[in-house]
Structure formats: C-alpha cells, structure tokens
Image (tube, rainbow, N blue to C red):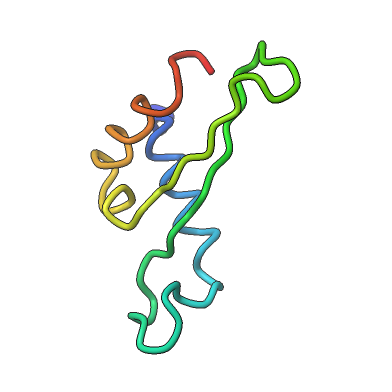
Length: 80
C-alpha cells in the first residue's frame, strides 16, 4: 500500500481536527461543514520572524484532495 500524498494527509488532518469544533460564522452557520483554518508557516532556514507567513485555508481548499494539493504549493515551497 503506497503512502498517502502530503496533500491528502494535510487535508485529513484538517478535517479530523475540525470535527469537534463549533461552525464558523456564528448563528445560522451550516452545522457540520468545514471550518475556516489559519496556518502559520516558517521556512526551515528562517531566522526570527524572517519568512513567516499566515495562510488562510478555506472551505473550497478542503473540498477535495485535488483542491488541497493545488493550495499547498501556492503557499508552501517544495521541500519545506
């Protein structure tokens, strides 16, 4: 059995970690839907705050493994 691609693991982690959270958007928000996520990335060779970025992972980015696979390289450089 081949290991899951990084995007699939990343998506599974996000969906699993959101399972017990309240929906985003307050009253009237769709129950059980994906929540808005914020990720902070820092390059492996970064020093202090140099290279730190905040990334928003929206519902559409978690819609499928393919959507997540496209989201990751736009924000996280290869081999990071």
